[in-house]
Image (cartoon, rainbow, N blue to C red; front, side, top):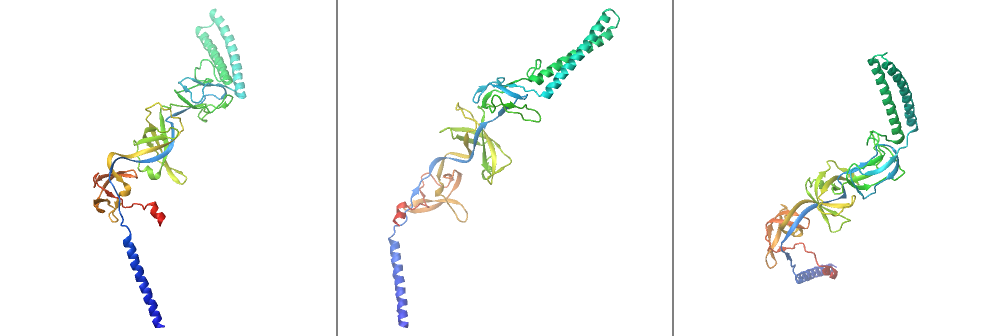
Length: 372
């Protein structure tokens, strides 16, 4: 029994030894790893972050009526260019019954007072002409008569304002014709003929009749994530791409970053605005979706390598590459790096444009995986 156990142990040792020899033999038969190389190139590297948003006018003007009533006519339509003072809409006033009756009663009362003052004036004038009363007494009666005339005219004007919304002698202070206050393009006309509108006052914003804007002064309005807002600052250049306008980039300048963020879908977003430099005749419609590339840094025509070629010392985190100095022989060269766009990185110091850099993390060809 002991002899059989010994024989089994010897057999196992022999099999293990033979297997190890076979493994080493197969290992020596494999082709040695051959590292490919790449040389640096001259690149223009742009470091940027992207914000999404839309193109909107820098200033929008809302045209609101100064009287309430019903729209009789509308003289404009969206997309039309108008000048300051051009008519926008005509409003028909629907008077309040109680106010109308009060104004009518005021006219009647003022007419009674005027008739009474006229009788007194005619009587006193006759006496004055005969020399019965003094000029001072007659002047007092004359002033009272003129005041009654003025009160009657005021009551009539007030009645006309309540009834129609305007009256003679007030110019544009009360007018049923609503006019544009600026020159620009009509972006929207949210009302139609027959709609009731409310005047703009201290207690009510009023009904918007039209939205006007100067479409030659457009801005990009978007949002950036809190992880990116620390990288940007005002006056940085922007490159705006509009989804509806292909193969065209618009230049802009970042001129506003919100001091306070807003939570959206669990992330803090900061509003930004950038003024477009309108140097061409391309018409950009308000509200178009757009992306803004915020240029954080730019390096023109510099020596660069792919970021994938860069290695980092595990202790010091010093970037370096391995440069070929013989047949499949490489030496380490420490680098000083500059601007990176995530694909290429600027090399400030450490290598030359003729150096051959080792591709240390080369991917095994697909056919090798298939054969395995």
